[in-house]
Length: 416
Image (tube, rainbow, N blue to C red; front, top):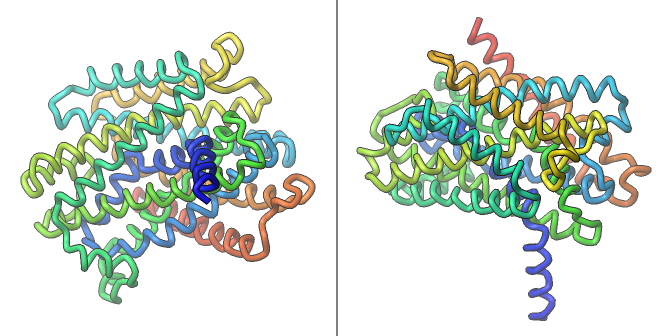
């Protein structure tokens, strides 16, 4: 019995990476801002969203992991082969647009987190850009994955910050499993923030990156159970982190009447006099780690998608001369994202918000394509969705798509 469990643990550790990393990168500056805003503006009353968020994330990510393991191909590859070049080009165009907007947001997050320590963005952003570029260009898949896994562990900073904020644990736990009162729904902006919290969790880029990572790592069908566990553990961990971010801001900013914030660094700065120096340092460090982490993964994800869609060589295990387009495109995304942040008076907040609206345009398309692919018996064999799992997946697709569309419409109405 002991030997069997030891074997299972070693197998899980061997495939640990793609699912855990992908889920955690979703807690980028935009995600941290959304969770922080939820806690600062409405206290504990949005914690109930975490459970459906986690279920939805597990369902969608598990389908991607399964397709990658069974087919040995990335999602972009499968879309091109099964739906044709026209659909692939449309999806690629939208994804590049969305991801570039998000890359800008990641560098903005890195800049604002280091500005809390009085380091100018004109110094911090170029340094971060160079380090991010070197990470992929000078590394290989195993080294890059290990660095990303270490980066994932630093999200514990938000869990510790949540504990240091001394919340009402009873109130928080009850709010997690109980729907809010009718009064909460009548508050201005509550429904919109519910949509934001749920919609920020499942992003289009995640599905492409996860499947490409599993293919590049070489996870086989016999390792599928461990790969699925990787996805489940990653999804639960990242949403536990989100839960603690809401709790930390609810216990400090909401309790002291601070209300709405303008970006994630505002939450860290406001927390300093309320929860102490350590909570401030952890929150600020967590923001920088999340920004650096996402600034590394998002350009990689985008480069994977474009190269797979065009049938070009890709992957950090390849040398520069073996996959020149992959690396040049990766370089352009990093350089462009950093350059935009360095533009004086650039409206970064509006840019970040509208990038989430663009996510809403693409997400329904990606989820529907995924569901059509994963239910192809000629493609997946016996690994198609079961009847019950298929029902849950389609419900998840419809709900997430609907929320994303409502989010998108609300953003553009607010800007008009």
